[in-house]
Image (cartoon, rainbow over all chains, first blue to last red; front, side):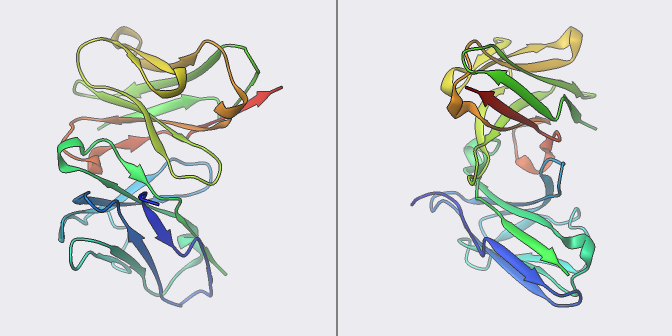
Length: 114
Length: 115
């Protein structure tokens, strides 16, 4: 499978716990994006990387959210001290810089905070 | 700032009937417009896009959309629905092609195809 893969598919956690999600982009894609999607809404941009550089993080939802892409390949999104309002689908997408508007999305990680 | 409005969160059509999914945009600059589709248990994928030039753009699986500046619309159509078209469709707008950080999605329209 050469698409974008996300792990885990589902995550159930208790309020206050930390969670980390992983995204493996298409191998030749140097751009990687994180989005959040809540019920009845479209994807909402959070942050993105050009290779290992995080080019925008101002739209991360709070300082509890952080993302890394240490070697310019896979990326992780961490949420610390989760809250019930963090419950959502977290989507990862990748793209070539030359076609940066053509996103390839993973199937997402569904987070439920109890 | 850019935004899109998708009229109708759910649309049902009979197999073989015309599919029309509506999208209106708001943009202070010439927009770039996109339709993405999400099939069950799959990630979103690009269906078609309008950047510049021809206002009628064709996408995959027989879909097309027409950019109408006067109506600020970018409606998605397909002449004859197929069962495999059942999915959720998202319209999106951007003010540039340099990156998807300025890509704003609508709330989506779920298409059901009735046999």
